[in-house]
Length: 606
Image (tube, rainbow, N blue to C red; front, side, top):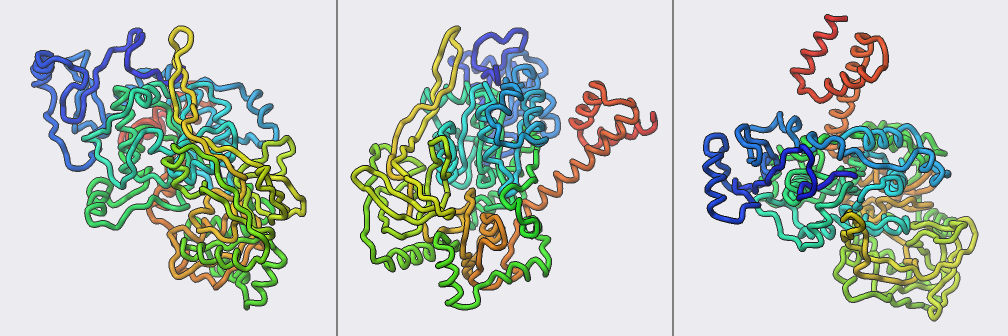
């Protein structure tokens, strides 16, 4: 089932539409005569659309002409009425997803708490046509939900991430997750701004994947800027002739923001098109494509330290107190002797730094200080892997150089039944066997585990056609890399720690701290006792993104208004029947003025 692409097939009673490009010309017309005929038919009711320098809100919008049953043109006055005529609304029954039963999901993930938030996401996907944006605080389990959805959804699912690092971490977390980057999946060149006036060309295989995907899951979406998000949505609509797959976004918008250069032209672009905003949730597509926000707020990482958890929650939204700073600064190292003793007591402790320069320097110092023999594990990889985003991320080097006694991070989950380690587990290297491609690592628990060679593959999605010409999207390996699943890890940048849980650390905030960097770095640990600071934190060191906070305020206001609306409707109809739910859905879909009018009428009626 899923979102059947509007590229042929049986439409039933649904009107057949044709896609127009953003210059006002029909992309599906092959003859000049037909183009002139279309132009004549639409001369009285279609505005002429000239190419624009920048992406505009109307660039990816579609509207049915009043006097034509077969054409769509761009209407620059569409704005508020767009959701009412969105093609998705005309195919409601096709948009609801096929999912495994709740009993099946709980049986498959018996060790996971399927809480109310999981059920809310399931309900949206199965019973509505809304897209979903999951915003989860650090350690709230969004990666776990992604794994559950990948198993539960029975339609064609494509999974990608915003960056090579995020994609690599996601793929390493489970053998069932076939993740690539957005740029790899859609063959988009990495850049800061995009224009929908000139969509790039793709090969037949990529086009078929886009046409047949029912669900698109994007991880770490906070790193995607508004221009790329608009381009992505517009490009899919362009290929699919007006429709979209169901889109599920995963992010913590209070972690690291999109990287946007402070170039004069780029700054002017975002100011002109997005009022100076840069995040995906301030894109035009996010506003128009009915994204239902679900907040995952239950923290699992700091579950044993409520004091630390509450401090992090306040830092996340910029509402920390003087007492919070005092408790954090109690963790400052007093002198060099204390630092030495900390590292002796916590031999797998790593140093978290702000810049790559600091990380490289510290890693070299630690490795050079060891007098043990050096071992070199050379990677086995296909030549094509060198050109992938995963290789460019730096997580998959051509060779791994280690010494006995050096701190090690394991870079893959244990494939055995006992799950002795996971991606990100820290330990000390105790032995190496280069010939047999394995080594032994002593974990923090004192348990020694054998870590062997693991293969990582770069996938590309392809469409296979089965019986009755049914299309199924499968992930086919196009490049591979294999090596022992370890990396020397005395130090990491704040950016590289995102998504990890770290046992012990010394946090060295230098002269430059990225926005939201304090929250990202400290939230890797489970407890206040798990880290030390090199120097005291000042209030000015804790930077919170105003754009992210404004979005959270808007969403909280919507939540409060929705609750108030539901109470009014329940009182009028005096029950929780299906009618109550239907009326509430209507209220939610209205613009503010009409919503106020209807609620005022219901108040008077009551």
